[in-house]
Structure formats: structure tokens, C-alpha cells
Amino acid sequence: MRELLLSVVLLSVGAGLLSAKVTPLGAKPEWAELDGFQETITKGKFVELLDRVYAPNGGWKEWIADRRRHGAHLASARGQALRVALCDFRSQAGAAFLEGKAELPPPTKGKPLAGLRIAIDPGHIGGKWAKMEERWFQIGKGKPVTEGDMTLRVAKLLEDRLKKLGAEVRLTRTGGSPLTKMRPEMLLAEARRSLAESNRKATAFTLQKESEKLFYRTAEIRSRAWLVNSVIKPDLVVCLHFNAEGWGDPARPSLIDKSHLHFLVTGAWSRDELEYEDQRFEMLQKLLSRSLEEEAPVSEALARSLAAATKLPPFIYHGNNAVRVGEGDYVWGRNLLANRLFNCPVVYAEPYVMNSRQDYARIQAGDYKGTRIFAGVPRKSIYREYADAMAEGIVAYYAGR
Image 1 (cartoon, rainbow, N blue to C red):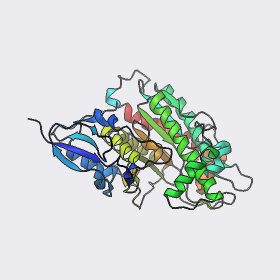
Image 2 (tube, one colour):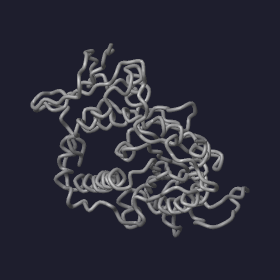
Image 3 (cartoon, rainbow, N blue to C red):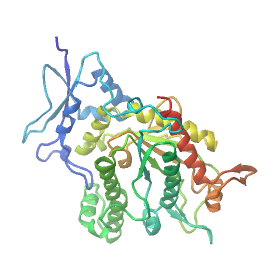
Image 4 (spheres, helix red, strand yellow):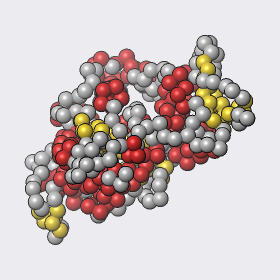
């Protein structure tokens, strides 16, 4: 006998409803794409993932209703304010839909990552765009610190290491040019809408800043997501970043004494974020595809590897915009465009603090082979330490299949 079903009811299409909003440069989702997840997860697991990882502050309860019924299917009625997706309430838990390490072919000798497809996403753009991105600072006549150029350097080192280990690797960018064809001046109308929606006054200055953010934060990330989802189609996306604390005036930045490390997976949607239809869809897509079953343990493995290499403590979130995932303090769930749009497991690395005294000194030293002494300790270049530890963590996770 069929057991009861959980109907996931999403207020989405009614005229004039708040729930019909989509995020800037987003599009109304195709809810039928969730139909392939019918009867793949128990009600208990579904609610547990919402409460523990994806919407731990309870914001989902306004948009998802429990309706028990027999034999229902994903449905969409034109003109109605409902979209319905179903999750099986049987005792059997559905398997992950995404290929994980269990589905990879056996590794060959010397090639522990054979068969693994990895996309590396070097965070930000860098180059002439670094100041616009607010990922640039300089002290006196020192080398400018530009995160986008630093992540690209690490990405190329990591690409080389992973290929030698047998992985198929592709970068989302290979230089300091944006992937998107959009530019800030093309986004002024969207910027005006975004300001109005958030009750901010549209002035020449705010329009410029908003259009710039839509360019480098939104259009660029959406272009990379299209490349990953439609062309590369990897088993794993590795997003590379460097962290920072507030540095004030980028021409006279403040250096601090602390540095830290953490990793992010998709999670912690707020009530306000779930008012956007595309964000509700993306949350359910990540939850139902069970990408957490891969991205959480691989993030843990990478965190162990980087913590051992860098000796950095974890960064601890104290607000409601992140939730601890796993047993330690290094892996957190957070809702970022850069990790929720990729339709596969994503690890998002945030090691070092660019304006910490110890990391700034290593950044100024540039890349080099071997080791140099910093604070009495021999260290690899910050770029090689980062790339080597990431490669070692990936091997530690995937070679155990």
C-alpha cells in the first residue's frame, strides 16, 4: 500500500503576490525541473535538512506546507498561486541524484583522481576590475593586494596538481577578464529597480555603485554558473577565495594581527531571501539533489588539510546568516549566489586574511619555490601552500573510494 506523501506547496505565480519576485538578473524558475525528485526523500529527512542546514531560522514554513494525500504529482496550474512538488513519505530514503565518489571508476596507479571532473572557480575578476570589486588595497609602494589575481594564481597551481593526479580540470576563467558580456552601463535600469525594491534612493552615486555590483557580483557569477552547468558539468566545483577583515581606506588600509580559515556550503536561507521565487527553487534544488551529502564531507577533508598546512584557527560566525555544518567549526552553511547556482556539490574556500600582518607579508613575497622564513617559521609561498593543501584534501577524500 502506498504511504502518505508530503506536498511541498510553493506560493509562486499569483498576480501581485510578493512571492512572485525574483532576484536581480534572475528568471522565474521552471518548477517542473523538480519533478525528477518525486518520491526520493522521506518527510523526516526533508524537514531535518530544512531545519538544520537550509533554512534553520524557520523561514521556510511560510512557503512550504504539509498536505498529506495519495498519488499526487508535481503540478502547476496557470493563474493559480500554487506550485506543488512532492516528496515520498515512505521509510526508504532516496539516494543522492548527483554522482559522488562512489560512482567514480577505480583509481589507477599514481592517478588517485582518475575519472573525477573538477571545475575551479577563481573568485572575483582582479586586474583592472579589482578596485571596482573592492578587492584591492595598497600600502605605500608595496604590491597592490588584488584578490582576483591571487585566486587565479592559486587556481592555476591547483589545476596543474590535480591534472597530474588524474582529474579532468577546467577553470571558469583563465585571465583577468570577466566572463559576462554585461557591463555596468548596461545595467542601470536593473540597478534602478534593485534600489527601489530595497527602498534606497536612486542618485547618480547609488546607481553607479549598484550597477557595478550587478556587473561583478551578479552577472559575472551567473555567467560562470551557466558555463559550469551547461558546458563543464563537473562532479565538484572548487571556489577559491582569500578572506579579509575590514581594512578601511584601501589606499591606507588597516592591518590586523589575526588570521583564520573556513569553508562554506550552501545553506542558511533567511525568511527575506525565501521571498524570492528563484531562491526558493534553488534551495529546493540543492536540498533534493542531496549535494550536501558530497559537499559537506569533502569540505571537512579540505578544512583538515588546510588547517594542518596553515595552522589557522576557524572563523566563527555569530549572526543568523550562517549555520555550522558538521562536527567542527571550519565548515559553515551560507546562502551565496556563488555556491547556490552550481548544480553540483560545491566547496567554497575562505583561508587567510589578506590584511593580516602575517598574510600580508607573505603576499608581498609573491610566489616562489621552496620555503622562506616568516616569524621564524619556514613557509611555502602562500599560493603554493594553498594549492598543495587543497590538492591533498581532495585526494584524501576521493582516494578513499
